[in-house]
Length: 255
Image 1 (cartoon, rainbow, N blue to C red):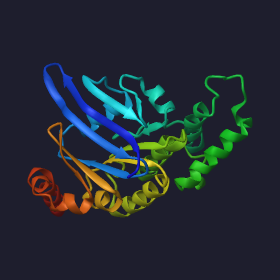
Image 2 (image 1 turned 90 degrees about the vertical axis):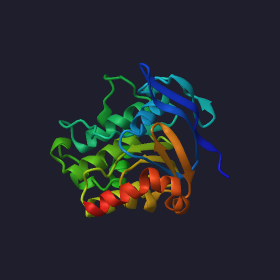
Image 3 (image 1 turned 120 degrees about the vertical axis):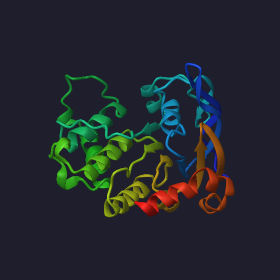
């Protein structure tokens, strides 16, 4: 069994007196693609915010590759090898594709805020930026402003920014939301490609994407995990069917 890349230990999050995350224990193994599913309002995005340092933890621990990162700010967690995307596309619309990705790369290469250095001459940053553009199939859109890209291209760009730092634990929050069937198929291939050799934790509502990508699936309902297992076992789990999966499948059939 692979070592743990990410562990959540009795994690709780309250907003005032209202509990949102209620004692989550999760072990994401190094190199696996792990999906987190659940109905709307289950707490999936809140859990992502807790892991990435966007929200403070009420009680419990977040462990990244054996190191306690609970309470660290997002930039320090990122430096330790975890990067994430957001539900809502989070890019710089007035910058080009190339400039968006390069922003994510410069800090990881140690340039910090050394504005007096000519970043255009930074060969390592240029080569890394071009390599990421190749990975996300946006080389031909290199100089296009991010704000005029198609929706699917913007989501691909956000994934590019997410992986730009070279993090080995990647978290994607509903990366295929709002996409057509063909766009979703391209996105799944992109995610499979960029997560090769890395650890992926993905929140996704599209069950075809989940069952296509995931090595294991965890089901979150009302802030608690009710199951973690292989896709085949999750599909057959009666408690999951009752709490979520049957309803989600019906929604997709009705769409």
